[in-house]
Amino acid sequence: MCRILLDDADQHKRAKLPRRYDNCHFSNYKPQNPSQSAALKYATTFTMEYPAVDRGLILMGTVGVGKTHLAVSILKGLTERGFSCLFYEFGALLKEIQDSYNPNTFSSELSVLAPVLNAEVLVLDELGASKPTDWVRDTLGHIINTRYNDKKLTVFTTNYLDNRPNEREETLEDRIGVRTRSRLFEMCKSVEITGPDYRRGIDSKR
Image (tube, rainbow, N blue to C red; front, side, top):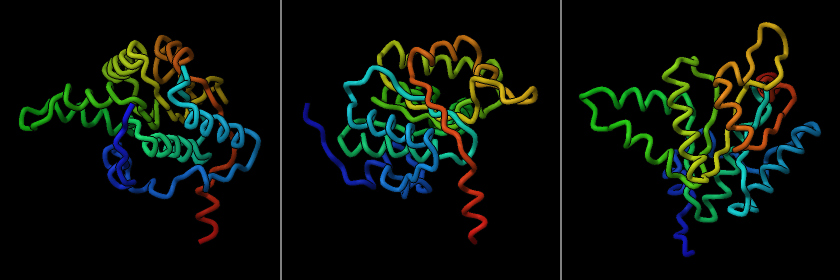
């Protein structure tokens, strides 16, 4: 298959990659513990072996452990090879869909969702961060089920874990629902990343 290779700026623009992630690469992800080393290995292997992989990834962990850094690095690695990729923060995607319902806009729900459903690889950041209303869960279910049926791979990041850290904390299943979490077990390999919030280290050095 012949693929047209674009320069980095065009690739990232087409993938809707925010400028704040311009400096995220595999080369500058510095693992601080075995879970981060394992996550880096899973991410690089996925990137090198795609499309000969049958499941996506769900990178799970508390804030500041490098989940989005790795997900963005996957996207960059795949776009450099000419694959169609798309990045969305889940809350921002929901906002775009809601805005499309405004009769004064020129967009439609279909025009917003079509690239999300059709991208060869979708990176969906901050899964579970939005308030879990019926509409949010239905929208997420539609995206996941459509991509599942079309055998398109998705890379998720989430701050929510499968095991409840304490009685006050919610699990990923609490946020997205039992059925959707069950589907994700089939669609993606779950990779839990642990460690302190690296952003706190940045702040302490200023």
